[in-house]
Length: 327
Image (cartoon, rainbow, N blue to C red; front, side, top):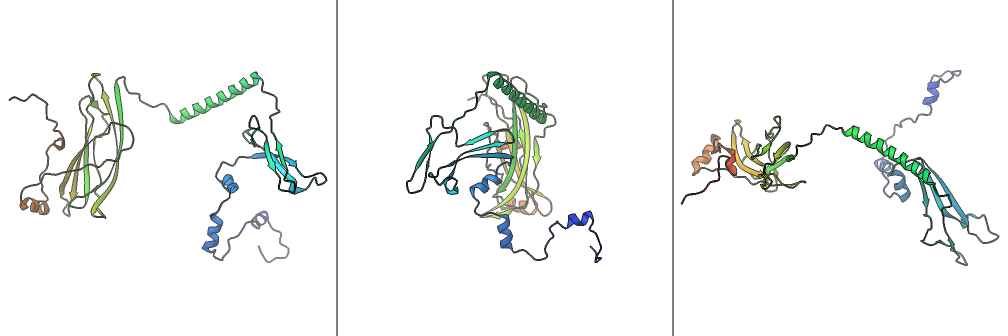
């Protein structure tokens, strides 16, 4: 540390002397890449780096297959069997016990081209029934503790639906909107629950996405919202013969101009899918258009356009009642 000839290194100095110091020179990208990435890994490299590395003890059963008078030479040694024991007590024998498959063959490349056959048999005594039962009991206790541990992680705070009640979860996402006339789009949506359907008092059945500027993708201008929403509903069955009317999602696409005035760009509806799974759905929309160029000029300069007072008129009005028609 100093220039003194009689200085004795301290404990810290001795430890720091073995620490690899960072060199001042720069490392080329090619050499650095070759150290980090192995472009042509071998099978042994893949096995050692892509599996859980547990401590393993390995024993080899070798066979000296050399001719008489040349025993003990390395080129005549062959591995007959490999036995591995890991830290969990699992014994692996490779190749497996012979059984009914017939003996294994080893062909030697020599003058005589000798062929050796050998078999591997399990010479251990069979497990007594009481020991096997004790082992199975230990396994059952272990699996039981593991099951209790997993149940403790998951918890038991699940509300079971009442008998005769259907519980429906919808995890949806409004991904994008495209093909509209103006920029800065946002979507207002709400869910209509038919008769015999209900939801939690704290459940929101409507929402509004963020305002999104469009991006030119091909021939269309696309606004990417990626707006997720979650809805939970209940259906109570009153008549076994009647099929339920399925909930409907209504959409209203609007645009925002420079003066923060909104314009209606389109209306659309979607009946929720009746089968579970992942569904990618495209909803066509429409809007009422006034007659003549004056309506479009008013829409451009003032921002007003024909709108629906009741959004259920997008599909079937909520006030519509099925009745008999008189001739």
